[in-house]
Image (cartoon, rainbow, N blue to C red; front, side, top):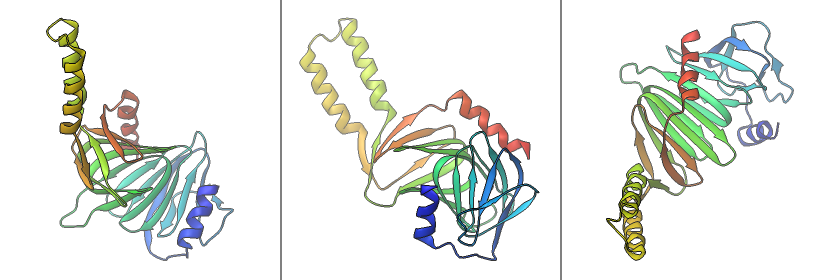
Length: 234
């Protein structure tokens, strides 16, 4: 409820007649907030049209299947809140959401704002999770641009970890014996594979975890791979 209050205070949320999509399927309790109402409407009959400035919220064990304008769609997972800021802009603060965005001609694509991070989308399948101070971005196919609204990211490269592991192996095998040599290698590697960037690109099959300003590459876990299949259910 606190996140809903913040959205109402920040944006005012006046009703818009501009239709942005519709909820075509659901599981469990899904609520729609419109025209500044804090009580919301429990969705019973579907499909339910969605308009610019609407807020969609799912409870525990619930999901909402949404068709956006054109051929785009998303699945809002349990305990999640989604704010439709514009036809091509979505604000996501808490929970997990899976997107399928199909590029059409020279369209501008979709912008997804997750707290202080903006994701630029054109033709892709990806999942975003936001919990505590952590934002996970998992890209199944296509390409994403990820930009920080204020300040810069500290981008750590996976090559750094791989280089450390190789060095540790050499130490264990007796190839390198001096602790001081290892510490100097670590300092040099950190300088080489850590960079400060305002924006970075993400390619197919890649994932990152953002904690504060720090960005690290991670693997896409099997459970996330399975969740992408929800996009094929409608």
